[in-house]
Length: 178
Image (cartoon, rainbow, N blue to C red; front, side, top):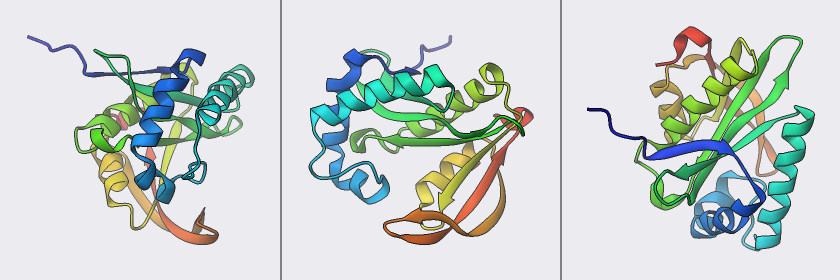
């Protein structure tokens, strides 16, 4: 017997702002290290502005940010999406984050897989990359577990905390998805 999924991935709606804010605030110590958009002063108004920004990104086709939601409660447990899209070459990038109390439960793996499905099936992309700082072991595991192939360590690939850093580049093709 199949079990219903514990999580869903979908576009953000304006009404998701309070739940998004709560997920960020509960994870603030972890997120401020990894995410340049997050600071100790993160406020509900920032979450509301993000909901508007995501709507605009979808409308222009610039990026496709999505929320990760608990399927039972509807609460936001993280974010994912497809960004850095190059339509001429039909490639993009997948990113993801999960609130602190939901890490280690397969949420990022589920969300990254869903973002990849969206990139391939809905956007018609033929290659997706996951670019991971060399010391971000958790994100490396997520990339590997969804079938992404390690390609290289790219020098100065990510600008992180005010300086360039090397990053591992993983790629996904439609047939790679597990």
